[in-house]
Length: 99
Image 1 (cartoon, rainbow, N blue to C red):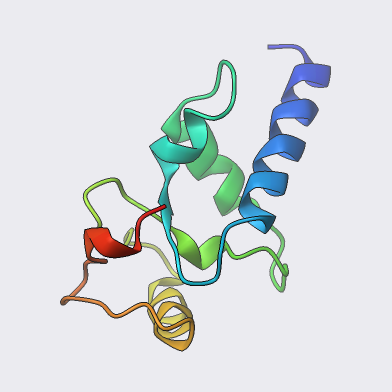
Image 2: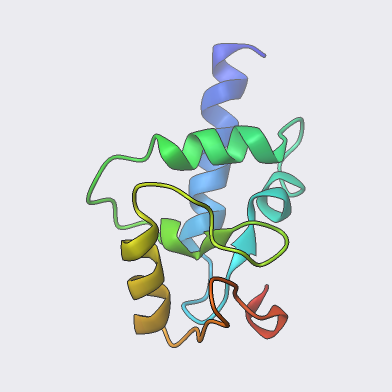
């Protein structure tokens, strides 16, 4: 993948993320399917590289099975989802919240 393509898909990813409604979540794969030549792992790596304090709703990107990913920001992610009105069932987001 050329560096130009790399920048383009990340820009598209961040645009999709910015447009995500506050009461909805999306999976890594769901975002990847909207981007040519991108897979869920690439999306996950791009999400992990977002700068701290970003205004993008990174916390609304979860695994396709509804479970929250296990990472250093898990507690913050959980708190932000609850603040957005997304109710959790244990460590899982119910399907009704998926985009």
